[in-house]
Image 1 (cartoon, rainbow, N blue to C red):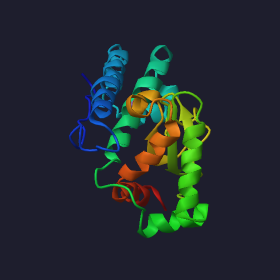
Image 2: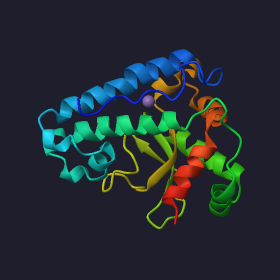
Image 3: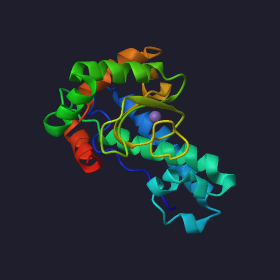
Image 4: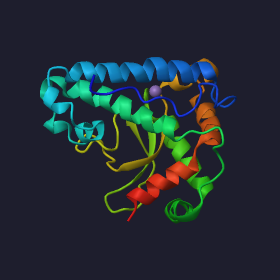
Length: 210
Ligand code: MN
């Protein structure tokens, strides 16, 4: 197996009451795990690709053989997006960013509150399954908020309209919230803000920004 499921950085019930243990367990152990399994399956025929990182694979999907390109797009994206999603949540999360990231958000969006509104509205408006993102663009500056369908990632050059380096992400597939919030995606996102680990988001920002 070329790729393995990244363990959660906390226990399944660590994010209660904002994110319930059952949702986290099924989301990570079943959904996220299935993307890893299916990525490995897709790459079985191409052992020479297995030494690449998932990031390398999805950044340049044109270099992936056509017969597995869609599978790598969906399952490579699915794997990497979830790795980042879990990594940016914490029981001690929430609040606001500080330092250079706070300054950059204020400069780009006017205030943290207007950024939050914009990010939430963009993620809510994503039709069907997908993801909401904040990224750093090629110019080293924050991009506007964007969303992608399926498991598309801003890393997918030539695929997405909003390429960039992701620093914040929310999963808006129904499997991310349906057990607790049913159809109320906006309520889920409102609650999700309480879990954002801004220290990690800042680290990603500082690594990507110029
Ligand atoms: Mn998901």
